Image (cartoon, rainbow, N blue to C red):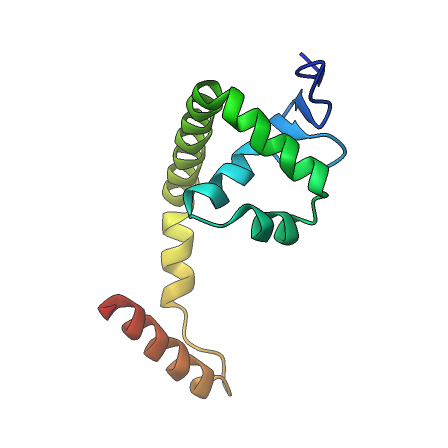
Length: 124
């Protein structure tokens, strides 16, 4: 199905990416990521460069269709995890080869900083 989802809310359409904001490449699932991270709607609107009407329409649509959107969002997250696992497994050997390569001459200082950051992140 392509086009408007409801007669009263022309800002939300269903396209090949799923539920999206008309005239943008932004999906409602992208908005859901921000909402799940407790971002306030005004900050999401500013971050994604949405109009007041677009943001209001998104919030209204989510309020009316919360259960359906939540179910689709869960599927999107599951698919993203599966894709990530596939590519991690597919590239595991190549990434190990790259990690084992010696540092290029003249990059010792940056390599030391990188290792320090990695250790800091591992202990956090």
